[in-house]
Amino acid sequence: MTLSAATLEFRLLGPLEVWKEGRPLRLGGARQRSLLALLLLHANEVVPRERLIEELFGGDASKTSANALQVGISRLRGQLANGRASNGDGGVVVTRPPGYVLRVDPERVDVTRFERLLTQGRRALAEGDALSAASTLREALALWRGPALADLAPLEFAQAEIRRLEELRLGAVMERIEADLALGRAAEAIPELEALVEANPLQERLRGQLMLALYRSARQADALEVYRQTRQLLHDELGLEASKALQELERSILRQEGSLDVDFRSQAIAARVGHERRTEPGRRRPERDGQILEQDETLVADAARAPHSRRRRLLAIALAAGVVAAAVAGVRLMNGGRDLTLGPNTIVRIDPKTNEIVQSIRVGRLPGAIAATAEHVWVVNERDGTVSRVTRETGATQTIGRLPSVGFLTLDERGNVYASGWDAPFVWQIDPRSVTLTKRFRVRSRAIGVAVGGGSLWAVDRLVNSVSRIDLKSGRVEDSIRVGADPLVAAFGFGALWVANSDEATVSVIRPGVARPETIIVRSRPFGIAAGEGAVWVGSNTFSTVSRIDPDTRRVVKNIDVSRSGLQSGLFSVAAGAGGVWAANWSELTLVRIDPETNQVVARIELPGAPRDVATVGDDVWVSLGVRGEEFP
Image 1 (cartoon, rainbow, N blue to C red):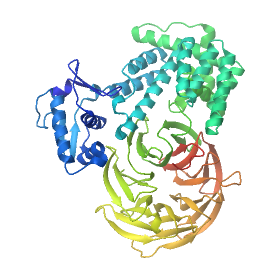
Image 2: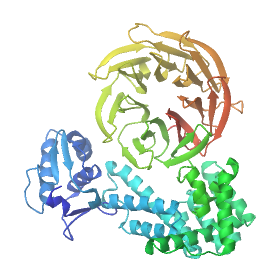
Image 3: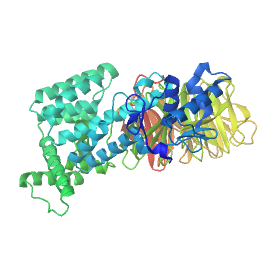
Image 4: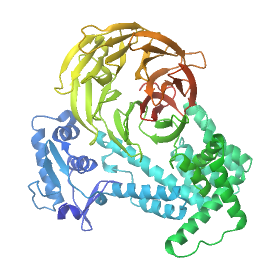
């Protein structure tokens, strides 16, 4: 890191600012500020020149755009060097083919500091130290000077990052309120919660926190009225019932359950004890009130020994109300110590050992296709036209946008991501580390379903009823193979590509090196398809069935009914792995699990949103959840 970079401070949590030695720098006009923002949003990563030109000039790009970009880079180097010229090798903005890198110490960016403090605050909360959590989270929120990137909000490239940061900001506020409630500050929290609920009417966690704050302020009737209004709003706006967690909280308030008060007292004591331990390491733990101690430790022990349904109920109350007590923290640890923000526009992780949701992460609008590795989950946000990379352990999200009608995803063995759209002739390759576009492949009409296998990338070319085989080494379309009518999705496995043809209810089997595909007749209108767990599995959207195909004989050996209503299921996705076959049932808001050994439905997992896609990796099952009634953007 150079001396000039070390003295610079970059601020995005408000209007874009750069400070040097306690003074703000002049950054020039809108395009110059946009250039800096683009580089800063990808700090310490190479941003290709083509990407910069596309984002900065868009439809106005011309032959002179490259020269204009170079002039902008030169000016930016001078601004960041406080007027001193830089050759680009030792400065803050460095030339690195095929583009430029903004080199900066991450701690000199307010976003990085905010995210670090947010993580620390959440960790303290999970450990039962509400006092430390409240202080740390207030420090994090104090970094905000207004809406993120406020002066660049109209620019398309900034919008995904703005949404991500604003979601993190709201999350930090909710965590800080949770800590305040645990410290007995219920009355003080009510006015703030009322304003937040008005601004975020569909955020159930805020409504749960408001209900708890009112209840603890001896306003039980008002708390129940908040629940009634919430239930009515969700029904009118989304056609949904209140979450089970919120329903549990309402029942607990009606019964005036002691656990609502015990959680508060035990958490306040835990915070005080934790603070005393840190300030006086050698001091013996003080004695506590005997009755509270007995209630507190009994609740912890009961939660640890309780049946799974009881643990779920305790956790549900905590999630809705925002309670982080010593007892509830113990229950959270049984679920990985994670908050579950349940609802639509999320991705959820299901543990196949228990068939329970164990993780939930907020993503963009109308999440669809999903693909997973051991470290990351990739998801298409169809209404936003973006693809997000979500880090499994932290929930951190990086998003790439401007992908027309993007709707499909697949991965190769190196982790490279391939995305395609409903109405575009392209397959885009995304670098998994930098989350940037690296290549673009073109087919004849509409590239929709994509798969990787046999050294090739396969793209369903819908309007010409064919599949394009793209050589991954050369990047060229090597073959165009005719399949059935209206092909939609494909899966590679057992040495072949399996393509679901919707209009004629068939599956085409393409074997590399074989000129003509085989045809298998299946149930009407296949949509989902997966290869694994000893067979090829095809979901029928019309008959609500999953057909099992023997990969050796290439015949349907079993049709498995997966609907419990007898109506069209809205079955749009099938996955095979993690010890089961998984069918996403849109209209019934369930994920159906089939035992591949018996071909029987062995579980129906209730979901807090409408499932659009399902993927497996290792022992994990991931599902993307949208809003029922919004099947397509």
